Length: 177
Image (cartoon, rainbow, N blue to C red; front, side, top):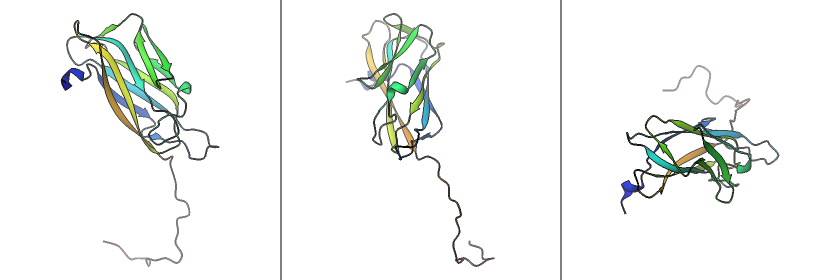
């Protein structure tokens, strides 16, 4: 099997807000943290790629590798005119597709995919978010071409208060090298 044939025809960059993403507090009574993912998409080659769909699979649940708690609360958007966004709840992925059977994406067509209002999972960990383009060049058959981004979820900020020891262990005026 030719690995180059499975490489993505589009290039993807991903950013998050906040950066890094914050896991929701472990306490189920506490409100969930909310995150956002923005995926920048472009075609690097001079020849256009025909794209049937772009799918973004977001792990959902209560475990460390899950990013979201409830995909139905996420707001998906795409900046391409004539494209729609929908949640395929059974597959746990967002599907972005053109009005027709496919659309050409050329080197002058940059766009973004945005997933907003993501209710963050309560477990700290790394979530694999998979972006799969179904694309082709020329008259070749359409193929799924996945790209995986591992997004970390870090604990909510913590603070140390009244951090004093009694009695002082290091006498006043002593310096450490």
